[in-house]
Length: 245
Image 1 (cartoon, rainbow, N blue to C red):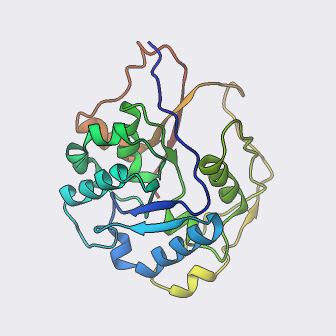
Image 2 (image 1 turned 180 degrees about the vertical axis):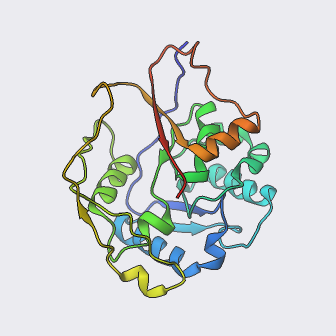
């Protein structure tokens, strides 16, 4: 049987959005990086950021992290949820999430890496999520956000319908240390991408994306959490994977 998913309302300029740290607590060690990410979010997308109790706390409990997630979904004034960064313990808070509250209040959830756990949780509730766009990385670590990131996020949040993704003309794998505040305004060195898309096998597939961070998915499976029954599900699934670091 084909799984049904709830339709999410597009955001509008001026909307309030939650800022959460339901995975790692890096924002407690490097608050200036989160400050920069929030600044970019508000200036680039005309959204109003609302931070929750554990967003900058050091080592908050899974129960407290989950409480913030539940409250952000329950609050009708919050139109989307942005995460600060990934981490490695998010699977521990899944048991404390309130499925009834979240199901009754679907809204965009944006995160990657360890946020794979909540993204899987939302999938099981029939709520689509957005993989990518962490405030402390894609938003913060550049003088300006990459245009490709801005365009895809703007479409995902504010528009409906088809969106064409083209291969990036350049790339970088340069990391800049968060401890040096000047790095927030340093342009990373980029290299030209001469190869475009690199495909293995077929160049065409159609279906709903399912996947996430490999390491997070392994922990999710080890913890015995639910994944789709792909043998019984009629719709086509496109698997996508990325590796931590």
